Length: 219
Image (cartoon, helix red, strand yellow):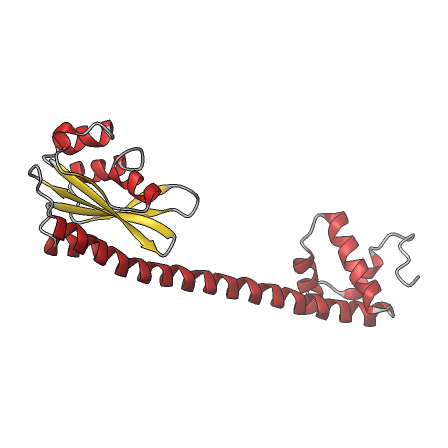
């Protein structure tokens, strides 16, 4: 939506969004239209171009005439071949956090008006708020899921401890030690072993009968 709105309202020939992959790299995410030349051009920005300078500096980067541009040889060559003669990039930023950039292209030298670049920055700022909220929501959902899984595993292990403690007439801590040692010796996941005991898939008396004779869990 950001790329499309920028193209529609900023008097530019094309627009695209490049976002952080959250692993230190940058990837093209959306373009105002899907021509092969434009996709190749924005993909090149992960190597050189106004996008990289923009995210590194945190400020808008402009090149009013790509014919005289020397900073980005690969990007400039592809842009001119595609018919674009002016370029600018504004950061997607919130305070000191930069998550990407919005790139704007014009087909004429000096074809990007200062007002368009300023409005592009305003659009980028608003989009950044939404993107950060979305990422925070996803991280929250992931964390909640991980915590739920941990709690579920803990409940299953506690159930298995109770089953073993009763079947073997042992203390709960000894039942846990027996579970842990068996899982290590047989290369099993503790939670899977505990689930089998808790659900009755593994019979506790048969499980205890497989312990080595030297395993004294009641000491």
